[in-house]
Length: 179
Image (cartoon, rainbow, N blue to C red):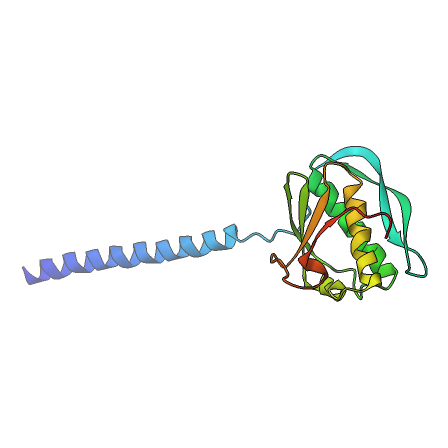
């Protein structure tokens, strides 16, 4: 009897080892299949081939006033995609005018509540935090450009998802073309 018990136990252990090895090999191969690298792409939905005219406000060469400039962008279906594109163009203009040290300001979420848009930007925008004329002009270049699209009357900037308690980004901005 002892030989029969040993043979049965040996067979059971053999099955356990074989199924265990098969399980771990299948698990390892499925992990390799499921790992997929996705490029970060903009999820903006546009009308193919259609463009629309927008008005951008940029700083003058002297940096003492805002000037209107016409531009074209793809026609976006969602208003927040349009706000994102206008904000990106405004930030690039601020970088070209040497107001910002980098054009690599990441725009996070954009929330629209009624006639107010919340624009979440990263900490690179904190260069405009101190309240002086040049920084206010820079902020109003974005605010005036975004409020040109209609339905948006007020802009509140968030820095990395948080409201600032002091400085330029603690305020809610409304359109001001007389600045």
